[in-house]
Each structure stands twice: as structure tokens, then as C-alpha cells.
Length: 179
Length: 177
Image (cartoon, rainbow over all chains, first blue to last red; front, side, top):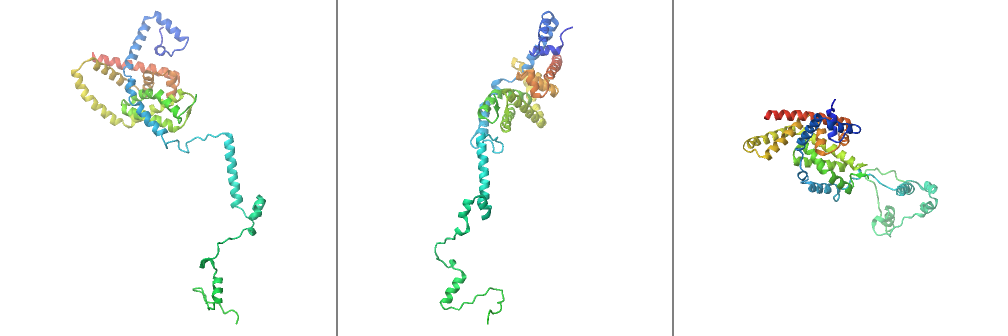
């Protein structure tokens, strides 16, 4: 019984494992028929190999294509998009980032999201100064008519001896007050 | 040694090591240099965009081969009609030229064509195995990984493909003489 052709094919490719490899080798030494089969197989292989493409032909545009790819992938402004990028961060950095996030959250709550009483609970030292008694509206002196209230204007005109009658459009005047 | 597809240095290394191999494999599917170059370029673009890490250089190679092979097969499937038309046009002048010229170069070109036709006559599952074996110099294990089949399966298919090619090519020889 001679060698199975499939085994011979694997032997030719150098893919046959021991102990079969040695067995096939020994058999070939004294079996001319199998040697011929192997020769035929090698010839066929050579024939198939004729259709291989030459490296220099294949590499004709290798550098040009690399340049294109490099510009496309690694050129200016073409980095990995934010969502595709894997975030790499050391542990201390992560902790600092988390602390900053908490600080901003709590800070926002303290300064904008709470009334005076809550502020007093959270940050007593700050609430003393932030009390409404200590906050006054500061204006830069009276310059234009917009700075006076209607009452002040009326009082001023009254003092100058004018009789001013003011009514609101579309409203019936109420009954005369007093006698 | 880990390979990161978005690392510029790794990318360069992988490109240099695999470009020729990918071209060889894709060329045996599309048989057109320009189209092959486009497909190989697209393969590397996908490699970058995927943003993956490979444990070894070989793993990156298998990934690239798998993707480029599939891109090429898809291209052929999509453009079947155009490709057949181009083939027809190509055949017309060559037949008349052979009539006058019988130099060695033409004989070799004919051998080459006979082999190519024979390989293309194989069913898809045998063809990709024998092409990877004969033209890319990969071993059974690598071929199995690229195609997602076992090493034993590769061995069987390589042998079957050779047997069929032998039949087709010897039948052609008999036709000639």
C-alpha cells in the first residue's frame, strides 16, 4: 500500500507532522511510483506558481498609497474623533477629576441653588456676609429723569405750584376720596 | 508586543510588512492593479478606523488578509457584468496576435492564462485556499485562521484543489495536441 495522496500533498508543503513525515520519507526512498507522483505534484505546483505577480509590479504605488493614508489618518486635524478615542487616565488624575466635578456640583448648589437659610446650614461663615442686611443697592448719583420715581416727580411739580392730574387710559376714575 | 492600529509607528510597520502580501492576494481575485490598490488602501483605512489592538503582528496580518479578501470578493460580485465585458474585449485582439507570434513570452503568457482559468474554475471554497497556499506563502495554520477553518480542513482542501487543477490542466493539454 502506497502513500495517500493527501499525505503526499501535505508532505510536499512541509506540513506533515512526525512520525508520518519520516515514514513518508523512508517510503519514498524505495518506491519509484510514489516518487513519480511527488514529482508530478511538484511540476503542477510550479505551473500554478507561474501566475504569481512580481513584487516590483505590486509595489509600484506602495509609497504613494502610504503617503495618502498617512495624511488621511495622521495628518493635521485628522486625529481620532473624540467619541472613538479611548480615554487613558492614571488613577490620581481620575480622582482629581472626580473631586473637581463634586466641587463644581456642590458649589453650584451653594451659590445659586439655595436660599439664605440653606446657605446658613451649608456654609455658615459665608451666609453672615451674604445676608440681605449687608447687601445694598449702590447707585452712581442721580443724573437723568429715569432715576426719579413718579411720586418724586409729582412731589417736585407740586412744590413748584403745578396742578398735575394723572389717570390711566381705559379706567374709570374711582369715587372721589374724602369730601 | 502589542500592535495598535491608530499608533502611527505601528501603522507604518504593519503597512510595510503586509502591503505586498495583500496586493498579491487581492490581485488574484480582481486581476487589476488599480482596483487592487484601491481595495488594499481601503483595507488599511478600515484597519485605522477600527481602532483595535492586536496581541501580535501575525494577528494584525490575519485580520488584514481577511478584510482585503472579503472586500475583493465583494467587488467582483458587485461588478460581475462589467468584468465579463472587459474580459471579452481583452480576448479579441490577443487571439489574432497569437496567430502571427509564437515566441517564448507568448507561450508563457498562455501557460499563465491556462492556470488562471483553471484556478478560477474551482469552487470558491477550494479557490481561496489554494490561492493563499500558492501565492502568499502562508502555512496551513495561518490559512485556517484567515478563513476561519481548521488546519486539517486546509490540508484536505489544498489537496482537493490540486487534484482538480491537475484534471483541468491535463485535459487542456490533450485538447491542444
